[in-house]
Length: 185
Image (tube, rainbow, N blue to C red; front, side, top):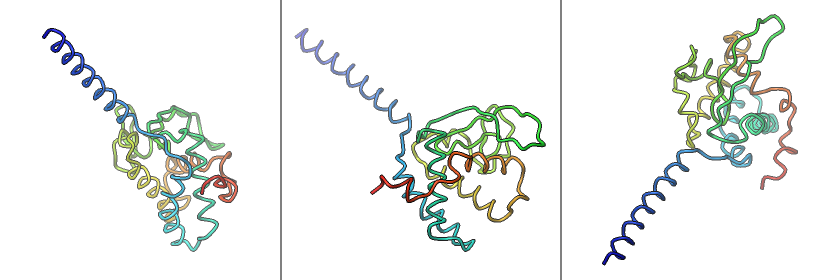
């Protein structure tokens, strides 16, 4: 009888540990492949660019540039949090580092609010929403930024312009979809 009680207790503890570990790993977020991200972005970016009269290969190349940035900045990890200085203009003084959140590395200074930064909160969201494995709100925020570019161009706020420069930075600005997505089926 002692063996049965001991066996039951060990199994219950193991089940509890397994449930804890599974819930922890599910809360961590996920890696999103560049091919999956391309598929998720093609239609919304295409719709946005069609409004400007730019479609076809330009849409695919813009998506390649964004996905390249994601790969470079967050490693395709939905839970990535990094600190880095904002992009600077030649006339600008040095600023404190930005905290960047999630797959698209969106700034707490510009698009979301956290407990540490005075923010524009352009996307009207808490930064922790950018760290889960539901990337629909991340994509919605990115589209809101891109829509603002389309509507206002360089008349948008300086911080929002910096966020855009960060996304379309040097290493990815010339990416072509045909080459970049060649391994996607």
